[in-house]
Image 1: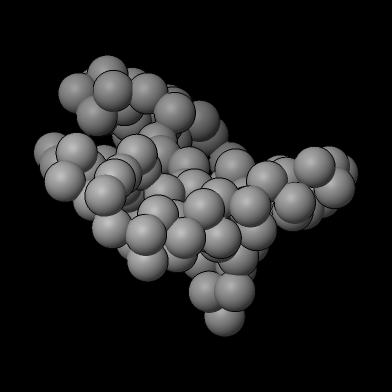
Image 2: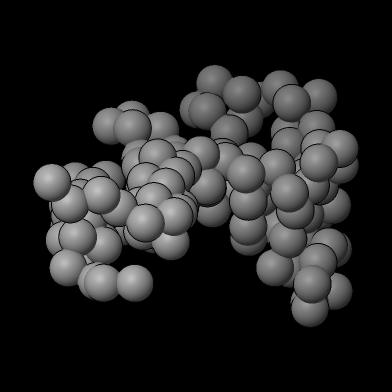
Length: 122
């Protein structure tokens, strides 16, 4: 029976942890994406670009004013550029690939790492 060395165990543990953190659920973001979203704005101070006003709200001047204020605040920060623009983009970032593709790649990475750890003699 082949017994894995400490190095092999650590390699398997790190890759398994990476796969768990990067694994996207079917209808939400992965833990890694959620962490990035939180890390760029931990106190939730940055505005998020709101969606278009609903058809019925276009006649409500208070709703239009509130919507325009948030858009203006967002545009002002976005126009600063640099790190502020990057933070605004990362606050709402999603996983880079479709969840099914990402799961397949993560599964392949875990399997290949396990095979590599099994073959490597240290």
